[in-house]
Image (cartoon, rainbow, N blue to C red; front, side, top):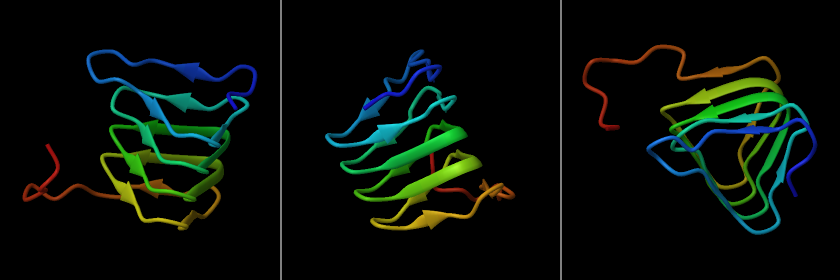
Length: 92
């Protein structure tokens, strides 16, 4: 379910939302966001070029960019991923 005031911007890379996922309100999905089944994206969460596996949660006030969250993992409120990006990153 996509809740009100959620902003989805696929750009060049599509945004994918799995079955049973809950997004928003006031969430932002940027290009390359891939949400698995049963993922929960809460209010004021931004996802960019990241994959959230089945059942992962980012409840509120979080940023997930250029990262992967494992199945059933939970982001802490006001958290940011990645905190720093090394020049040896394996992500495209």
